[in-house]
Length: 280
Length: 314
Image (cartoon, rainbow over all chains, first blue to last red; front, side, top):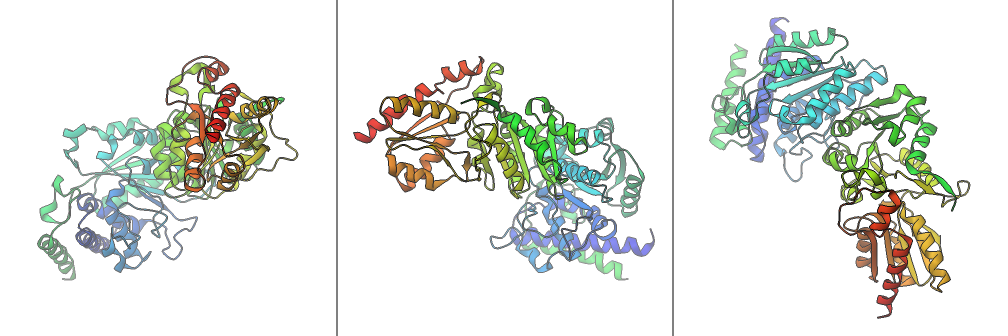
């Protein structure tokens, strides 16, 4: 990784964060906290790693992406729009009655969305299915997924983890967006899934722990996952919920609430300052 | 009616028959010997995936596989396919309208000895309430084979409801035409129409013969596709006979009886009597004993037919 690539990714993730704030602000609903925590991972996936073609969203040899924590759709829509799957002007219509940008991602309506998600636990199973199909057809695509840490409370996640290890799906690379918060508070207080690393390892996965806001670490972990044969990889990304917007960071209250005008202005100003700082 | 094969067996055989199509992938949840998907597994092991006893994961995984251009058949007992995995079927399969066929076997009371925990009497209601879903309940082995083949050619979700027990042969395998969404007039009649699905079609045939000997002309209609339902054949039956009896191995709430009543109240209201499980859980016993205990018999169809006719005259 050279300086320019890192700078590019920082720029993209900041732009994604701005899109996230604008979407949730314009619809006055949605989930900013978890969208912001996975924005750096999304930037690496869509602007560095994934083999996708915005002009041919259903290209059969493309890498797949499943946002298992589907409520963080603003992060996915931001990446898809910025990548060119649909016009960026659509983003501010998020959750509107006349928009195709549903509250949770729909593969029927949104170009580039590979699986409809929203009901927690189901996306990782679908990602397993896509990886399985790749093996059946001897395709060389990879399937990427992002899970929430609260999502681990869904029993279906563990069914999917067990299955992916059993079928040795080394083409499945999942991220755990480990931001430690869910709607009702800390995950360890609501219903602790810890220790997540040992549990997931025990389910037969390669586990790599990283800082989920460090681009080099994200990229190195994906490289390691791609090199590993015979087992799927879970990249446990230590993240900060609300990352990048000072007053949203580490606040469970920003899981599913929208900023008012003043808060939106503050957030955008902070993110613009990051972009401006990069120009220097 | 001669002894045939169970609809689940016809399903397994049909999967093997159409399995040369490399798009077909079959999933099962540790029940391949019972659901008969093992017939496919033996012929095409590379496209058979045992998902273990994890039906929720199986349904969402089926969606993922289908999203990659495959025609996926996912099988388990009806109880777990439509019951346990309901929300996966709804959100991961039906909402994105993915190409997944759910082969749900051991539906209804004829599961017999396993008892109420395994006797799915709600699956038709659940599955037909979900947008984008097609619901098919074959009456015999001939129809089950054709339904499986037809479902494989539909681009979208289909729920196929199969039964455990050997089914009498109703249809001629050389001449029977099956079309999704088209009801079948099994025999003509003018006094009452008996509209049946699945295992109850053969009972309806027996009932109509008995009624004939008593001087009552009963039409028998097989509704193999409960959704989309054949409105025309139902409305015509109401107009021609003025009295309807519905028969299903399912709760009378939400199943075929409800679907027929929905068509009639909007188009041509006539008296309707429903033969089905009267909103009770099943119980253990031999299949025929359980069916008798819950009134799913030709005798009860005859009694209900007479009641419907009496209501018409009143």
